[in-house]
Length: 318
Image (cartoon, rainbow, N blue to C red; front, side):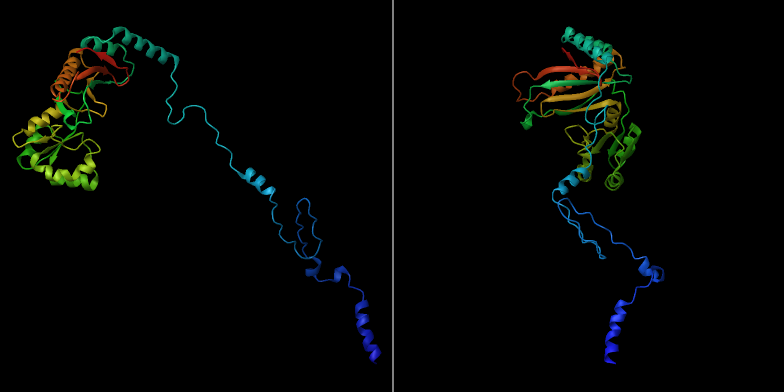
């Protein structure tokens, strides 16, 4: 009996396996383990039922992959590049060359001849602004030699100025009658502070309002709109508000010396008559000459040059 029982396990071992068709579907459709490719120089693992362990990338292949994955360098586009002016054509280069030759040949002509030459070399299609540039022999590091002021031009600037007046009482009506675009007190100051309103070109203020207007220094100062006594935009108690507004609307020009001791200002349009341009330029130059500081030694006015918006400068003898 014991012998028969001992033989049973051997019979179970020797029992033939069932055909593949009779095996369960799960065993027949057992997924194959993916074979991972081994890097060069290493043997592939033996095929087993278990998935192959992850293979660490070889240190030699890492930089190669990094270089291939790096983005391609941007291709430079032909044509206009930011920060570079467009190329000038032959026609424009020849005109500029001829203009420079005309100016060099004329030297430093009198004012009326310089204005006539300026109109000859005009090339822009729009109405250019005529500018005056004066080089002064002043030392800008000395506070008593800083040049600043304003001058009313006889024939204006050729453009409309928007004028705001910070005032109160009867001066509001006087300013509006004289042509001011905006006039008022606290309401205008509050509008600038809260809404950032800056729809004006010139700001005037009466002396009694400067205590409140001074709060707008951080807003108006960087834009050159802050009223100051040196520029003539702060009106004293005895000054006529209506007259100040009329001067600004007619074309009053402010000037101020830069760090190099130069003064620049627009004095009209190139479409003005020669006599009108000459009168405006003369009024500006004489005003700057009259503002000569007492501490200046040597030549005060070194040179005077007139130019259009798009034209070369022409030296002038005055």
